[in-house]
Length: 154
Image (cartoon, rainbow, N blue to C red):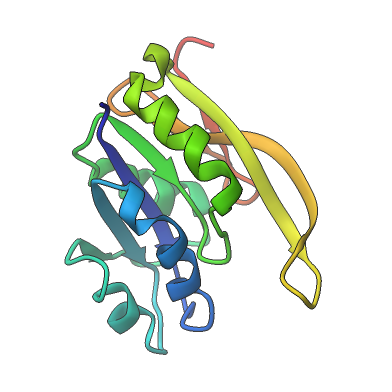
């Protein structure tokens, strides 16, 4: 079974961070939280899930922060999430099956990415996006805003 690092960048996410981590923490082998300048209780909430919390001076560059988070990952694969993400319970059985099968040696795995929610917390907009990548395979984030994952050998 493969091992997975969850890598997140956060800032002032106390309202949503626990919900996110509750949905995924048990599936991860390590959790990396990179805080870009929170002034609320984000880091205290993160500390309930991991001791791997790092400060990163915000430079108005999401890719720089995400690449820093990836640099701290020690497991075979990296799963990235935003603090307002939630890993859907309906995906858990498939995810565990893929994990047991070592993600079939894939370098990149696409999963649904939810970008808008209704008042009841149900997703309004979703699309598939690269969410899990093999660590040390050369993936890096590009773009200061609306960042994307790039591989050195596309």
